[in-house]
Image (cartoon, rainbow, N blue to C red; front, side, top):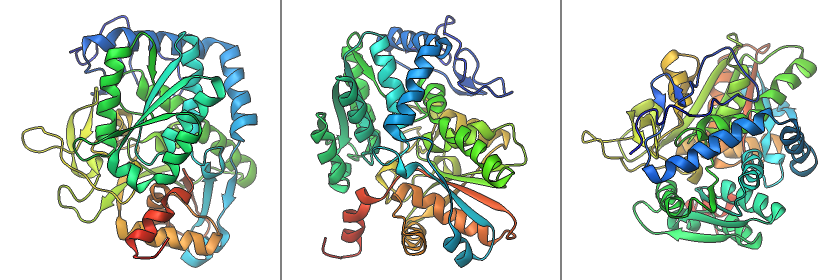
Length: 416
């Protein structure tokens, strides 16, 4: 295994939008978190990826091509929307939504997959593999691969395939091969395991398009940087449209890519509170939730040192969430670091609270949000209710909820 920091010749990653914090260090460490815990077979591929990403960050043509794709293919900038009726119903602070659900493919995931697809071609590779839980990263990867003519294989747990059939159909329609994973809990964790195994045997020709701010260096910083377009836009929009920054930003956290993307450009704005919302599931009992930042402890999972749901022997615990995209026992290392230094706070929303928020947003604003995003909406409602009307709560609405309609209908015993 490659140790905590890995080889000393790691390429230094220069963030797309630098902040004053000295993290990550050249070894991909966010304080004690992050690094690389990987088989030796992956060291060369990760070194190449880090070097190519650092070079791309310095290349104006790479940035220009990505920005053109964001503008003309994704439809960026995504709007900053004042949820007036929801704010009136809550009766407290004003709630604004960063509308990532309006992006091409219906979520924030496309911001990252387009960047990684460009890097894949830069490395001379033609095959891309990915993992997916809710299917949004799978759809976004399949979309990017179709756009650039790359081969695409997506690993997805059988339970998530059942819960997210519309996205499975979309991936196949886009030309991707969806490989079911029947081991373990048959969810996101197991899909990542299988994708990692594939990559170990195919690194010379294959790029692993990891979907969140987790995994070994350079994935956490690279995915965060691609997703930071969300926060950079939101910051500019708040200043232009509102004349000020928000008082609170709320985003759901599974692996943590949408939260990392909107939080990062505000890290130096100490007056802006940051709240990540994990999956509270059915209860606080082990196996009933997916909230490692609230109930886990530091450990190693999927190549990185971060907060993990684990038992006394260090074995990863089963987890549960109503949302397939948050049904994961770990979290990105930078979120662990932000928790440790107190820059961000992390709460939970239960399945019942999430379903209620899903309904309320649909009926007050005519917006059907993803179950993942509805975790953030649930806590934003709670926070707004406790704040005065002149404060601003900004929610990263990370995805649309069409994919969840059939599962919600099943849970409620409604014919679909």
